[in-house]
Image (tube, rainbow, N blue to C red):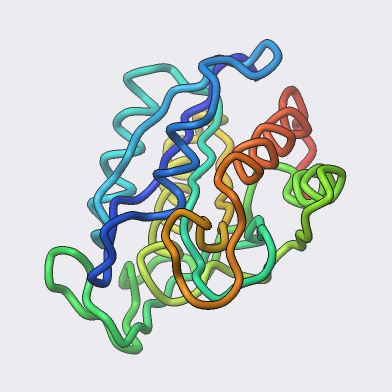
Length: 203
């Protein structure tokens, strides 16, 4: 892997910031031999993935790592799969609420991440931070992002690999409950990218 698109979401749910965009800003322009392209996308079903996919194609990126915020989690969690399902209590930033709905009628039920998510989780653990592979990216926009990116890559048959990684709240957000310093999370993401670079094995 020589060029990687890393995405983050804008703030949602009444928050002023999003942990993923805070961390994205702290990533270097290059990790090892991998050029890092950064993009903040709107927290909007479908649109987020469409914007990211177009950017990946424009930049000839070989892979996409989407970052998202999972407030309440006490670990950094690469996601195993994206599912063709949305179920959330809140609206996205366009005011759309999806409850027990398909993301794509007639689409595949699920797509598995095509970056080595277990190796990425292990790399985060090597930084001294708790991490594990989560079964799926939930029922909100994060799952929509992963599912659609994998769908686009599969249909285009272009070899672009995709994965999603959830982050806890950043300490700067001053949220109740568990949080991590954004500098620490940025180092963890760097380590995960380094572990994934050049690896073509799907785990």
